Amino acid sequence: MSTLTACAATDPDRVGPVLSIFDPLFIGIDEFGQPVQVPLIFRNMAIGGEPGAGKSALLNLIVAHAALSPDCRLCLMDGKQVELGQWAQCADVFVGPDINHALATLRKLQTVMDNRYTYLLAVGRRKISRNDRFLAILLAIDEIAYYSATAGDRKTQELFSALLRDLVARGRAVGIIVVAATQRPSSDIIPTSLRDLFAWRFAGRCTTDSSSDIVLGHGWAAKGWSANTISPTNQGSGLLIAEGGVPHLVKTAYLTDDDCARIAAHAANVSQARRTAATAEEKP
Image (cartoon, rainbow, N blue to C red; front, side, top):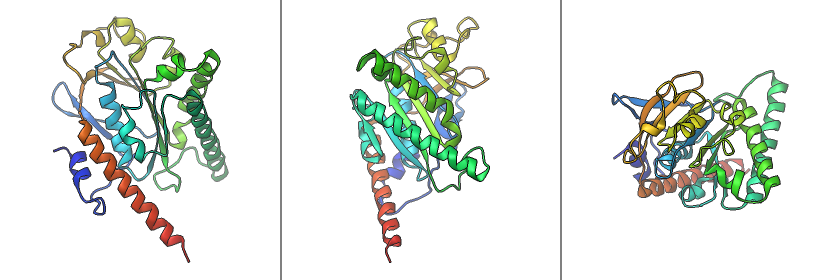
């Protein structure tokens, strides 16, 4: 049983070691069997690949870590609803197939971001710290194309992309982390101006070299790094690249639906217990 699963299976009132969004996140193993950890605080991640490549598995791993981190809040967007739906009980906001709700959520996050920068300016700092009272926020989006290219009209799609680009560009220092996944890695879904803002990029199997380059960055396929070479039966395997780095082959860990349900229930119970305790302390 994995550490996350074991934690979720315990009594929700008996909390063991606590995760933190400031700590590196375990996502799987490399081709030599060594553990791969990704620091997400002050960074963002783009995930791309064909259907069945394992994008949602990686996204669920990240959401699970954030849900079990008391110093992180969740905002989730999922046009299909079912990929991230199990985490809705842990999230401050869960957006389904509703472009207007998605736009309103991005605007609220933009306001939070601006308010936090006002605070940092007032105290003479450039980014938040682990000891700040306000919490980091993970914005996880499954199938970004639904909101940026499918739902609504061209005007609302462009507005969604513009708001998201602003959060990715400016949100890192104030603890707003964006993780966005798509099964359509193309330039109209992830334009270069947006892709290059993601410090971490993961390309699961892609159908073409150009699709792989859309995720990893231009020219990597020509250098021998293409997610098109990954076997269709090797789900969860992909190329992970960090900002300024070189791609590495990674096999991501996997949480079953039951794992996700147990972890989500545990995280929701612990969160509710903390809110109840905080309310009790505030009463005279």
